[in-house]
Length: 353
Image (cartoon, rainbow, N blue to C red):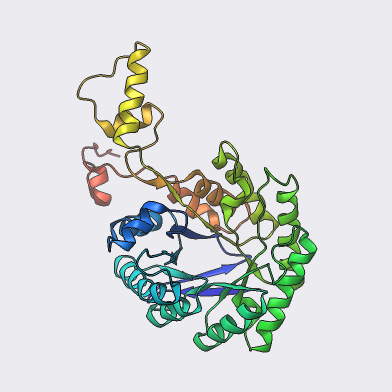
């Protein structure tokens, strides 16, 4: 049975076909997040700290760390990414004891991350491009770490799933030449947007099955790619992830956090209700009000995608006796509730025989 081991300083997680689905939190990545990129350029790491804590609290078992900031003062990533990668990994490791995924297209940044990271991180990534294979596979072997293998090569990204399978097979075979076992290769078969290609879901399900059955490798993906450009993206993602897991996918790079309602969200919603003639009681606890008016929570909570994954784990017997599902759905303890077994029984009358 294929098992990919990822570890922090003290904790391990196994990615495997008989294991709970591995959630790789994607938020510590300035690519496409202009606000975060600007903060990192200014030496402000507050969002990174918040995102690290929130993602772990909401169910991420691995955190992806990307340092891809284009500095105005120096646009050369070979010079800017390595020191930032070190800083980010040191910061995250100091906040949470969680497994890491070192994410960069810059080999020097990957090396800096590997030198800094405690435990056994996941490296993200190698492709089928010759230059990339020659640069990354020696790092994988030297540091004895697993690696994400993305199914594109020097010809680009093919829409033909057979071509993407062939690229994945090539990477697995080249890795074997370096003495890297197949269980340390986690293939990303590249999920296409279903809004642009109607067969995208069917393609990836078939491809994941082939990768499992013919190559015996674990798989991952950028989960939100499937819903790109569509309304109600969470609805698509919630259906896609359990279906991908049933086909054999064992992990995904995704956002595990449902964002908290902002003061402006709350103010606008109260205004809408007031305009409809609905009276909001004065002095009502805002934490009580927010879910009642359809805004979720004032705190970051697990996303619906996490809920779907937990349910899929249970249904696929990768959650023994449903323990994780039960814990996930257990209401949070009240801050005023008595603590401990005896405290829970306080105030009850003892029955006499």
